[in-house]
Length: 219
Ligand SMILES: C[S@@+](CC[C@H](N)C(=O)[O-])C[C@H]1O[C@@H](n2cnc3c(N)ncnc32)[C@H](O)[C@@H]1O
Image: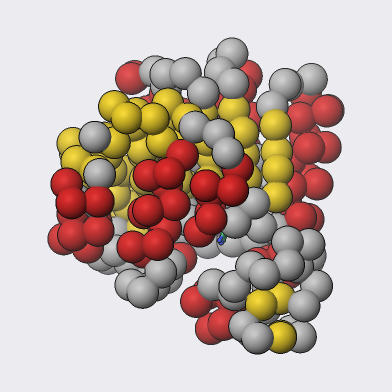
């Protein structure tokens, strides 16, 4: 990967800093989508998200941060919600847009850095993070949480589905309950309503990997 001053030289949004995951792997996120489906790209929405929206409903405008190839965003949009999916991987966004066209679903996909969501100049009632939070290391998380706060309406809801550190066969970036509670706190505009055990399906786990489904309110 070519790198200048810590930014991707070929990034369409010049000035985006490499994430810890990109520095660790030496590859831009986009590369995950070049040679067939990525490990998390299960070709359907995450069952935990399908259940979540059917049981609780999602309110208002929805942002899917780190939408990948768009299955969750497409599912939510197919239920009549207004959805914007953002990602830094242009290849994933192209696949997501193609699926939307093929399925005749009205949904918006845009390239944007989840660490700088304020640049969108928009606000959302519901924000979904399915598999993005756990890719950020401890140094990145406060900035990500502030970025999320900048686009979430007061009293809005953030849902985070991330790998958990409990149980056998944990995913590659396990997160503890305490880590979630520490970073989403009252001092930075959030109140954790619930952190429930769930599963994240991947292409390499027969029954998914242990996950947390966190419900977090913007105050
Ligand atoms: C583990 S994947 C999950 C994708 C999708 N949510 C899903 O459930 O299939 C994480 C996604 O976050 C995207 N991503 C990573 N860092 C990002 C950032 N700073 N801004 C926006 N998207 C990012 C990656 O390109 C990737 O598509």
